[in-house]
Length: 181
Image (cartoon, rainbow, N blue to C red):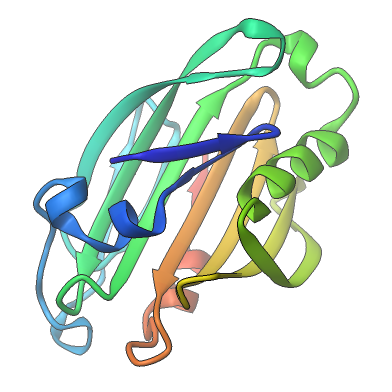
């Protein structure tokens, strides 16, 4: 899975996120025919409902100040490569989050918004963990529906990638099912 990094946000490229040939083989079922099923990452300390068994990959990323971290990615691709459901997480060093969750989330949003238009943004939280809800649109027409949360030094990013002709019908169920533990 190719990622784009910038200002603290780490995102799959639209082509890689939407096309399993670039990202690895993914589930190719039609979205309406796919039942949501629970997925738990004990290492990631989260659970979520996904419309299939996710592909998984870990890539090294560069953090501010020259540090590196692992970006852990879990995704399912549906509707002939037109819809992707993804959970990513990475851990920051304590000094990278010392200016507070709002600043870290702002930097992650700035990285996510690189080469994309911010359509909507709002503050959110999940069980007291600060977060952001974002909608972004790529120049190529891809729509990114995002929730990101900073729990301690761990940044969780949930991303639904779709195009206008293939709306992500399971997005709210996916996003609403996410739990951190």
